Image (cartoon, rainbow, N blue to C red; front, side):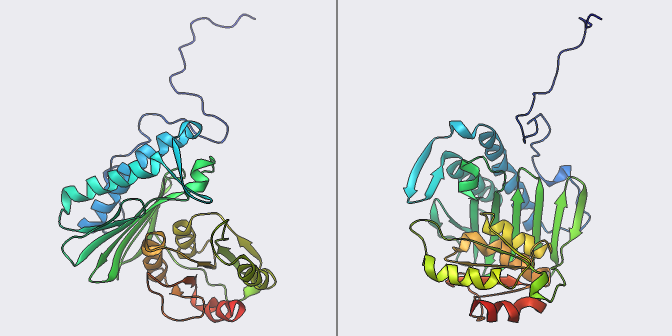
Length: 301
């Protein structure tokens, strides 16, 4: 039978394997298109709009990752044109509504502001994943006021998962299928049932033999260890109960500022690996639910 000749032309582009078509409507200008079921402050709304704006260029460049202009920052540590552009977009969007606030970013350094308020941003957490076409990366944005993190947003552009939190108001996730679902850390109390995330030091970073001893101890006592390459998403996943614990060494403030508040607002605990209070310049981080905290400290000791 002959095929019909009057079939209308395909209007949507065909996706490559593992990637959906980037059609009109997938780039959202801000949170208005996904009404929240939980109350959001003006600050959170500003943060989400800035993150969505930065995500547009990241999604576009990720679809053409083989054409990215890439320059080398150091051994095993690369920065892309997409990374720099996303940070510029974040700065521009935030300055429109909060011009007096300071800004600390991974790529552009620090801009002093009013001395009280400071944005802390990682425009592309998971750069190595991004550059290799692995769809696991995020934009992380936090607001620090008088030395304390009071709000955080972590957005995964490919899965379209938006994690957000405010001090004293809880932590939430918005997805294409669920709006403003409250985040809670897991309730597991036995290491043998726990799924633990980590960050493995790469070439030129960290003490590899010392780290392997820590990893061996965790491997021997838990249900599994995962290394996905984005500290911000690791912390968001602990807050969501997907991971039971997460540990890593040598993190920077922009890697974790939003995530540590998210874990705490979801009922979890954040400290350094020996168990002391965590600060943004601590050399190590351990996030977990309360039931596993002491066991993880002991295992990593």
